[in-house]
Amino acid sequence: MSVNGLIRCVYDKILELSSRPTAMFWLFVIAFAESSFFPIPPDIMIIPMVLAMPQKAWKIAGLSLAASVIGGYFGYAIGMFGYEVIAKPLIDFYGYTQAFEEFSHYYHEWGGSIVFVAGLTPFPYKVITITSGVLGLNIWVFGLASILARGIRFYLIAFLLKKYGAPMKLFIEKNLGWLTIAFVVLLFGGFYLLKYM
Image 1 (cartoon, rainbow, N blue to C red):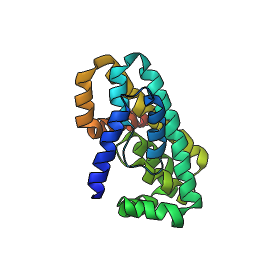
Image 2: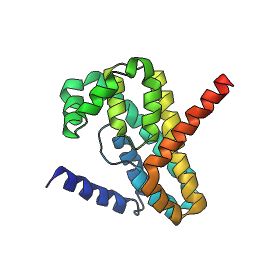
Image 3: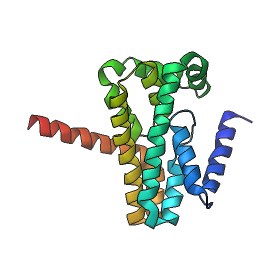
Image 4: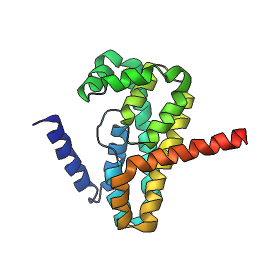
């Protein structure tokens, strides 16, 4: 089976897990793993779970945030203590070697901002968490950027689904990349206006 076929099989299994009574447990596992070594984001569980249980939207988002940040620190530790043995083979396996090399050049000046932006977008977050550990990004800056970015992302998805329901599911799935880019532009535009006006 090809890597893409394997990922599709895992994707389908994760969707099936979102309908089980143990869905919250599996959501924690997926959100944790995605931040450090797993290729599929927790959004694919968050979306059907919030639609099925809108009254638990904030709990679902909060659990995803906690698991993602804890998993991010695990990815950081992989980068810091196990680059040659664990991190490099993982980066090579997922085909992220070039992305890793490109981002590593910017870390000393823009590390916190890179973590924040990548945490909001569909960019593979594990690349960022591992790179942060390899390059020794300040652990407090890393944690704060992770909490802000992942919190905004997961709570925004939960809010939109809770408020607008199933039609929003299709819109989010189709436009997640553009939505997060637009949000980042607006956010940094707001900071710029506050600073210079």
